[in-house]
Image (cartoon, rainbow, N blue to C red; front, side, top):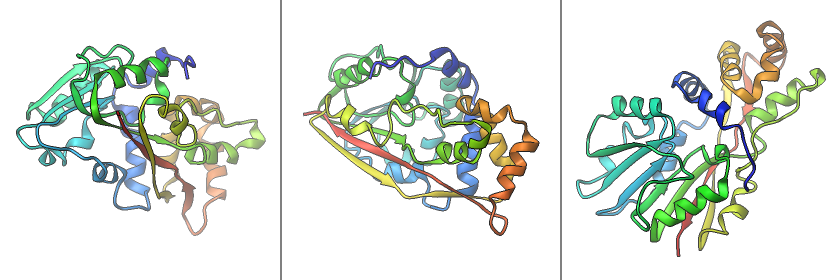
Length: 260
């Protein structure tokens, strides 16, 4: 669990919102499940009167843009990210609206013990260099009986599919597997009394290969594919299209954890 990632590379990847927005865009354009991942996540959040809610790794804050009505005046929402720029973008996206903001490293959460009723960390735990330290911090600041929600991807989704298309070029799937739907349960059960895995059924139906090329360019762990050049990548992807559509599996979901 304490696998060292490359925090410098991660910081560079999230220094601005551009690459993140590129990745969000392809899901918005081509996802076959029209509910939307964000809407699905919120359908499983259990917010109650006077809850203190913390999000770690809030990114641009876009997920909250149409969801603030779910919070009554007694609730206090704190949005944080380790990227100062992301926090700034979130502020511009959402405004004050009874929200607190902070630049926070999950391994060193600057809040008191047992002070949050709900904690959210979506699509970011696999980036944490010392996951044991990060989860210990989450458990520390979460109240007894509180819930921790964390979304992640599986090991049979977009990146393994793309890597397999380019295997004859020596491309292998080197996506970050430090925290996935497959191993997340075993990691989380060491910290929380109850852990439940929920899966979101979805796929991509891509009709414009250029959008997929932009997506590949936005991913640091797809750099070996990107080096093949857009023309080569384009030719291979177009060969896989059926009736003008490239169907790509997605594997996303979340864990709902309770502190006993």
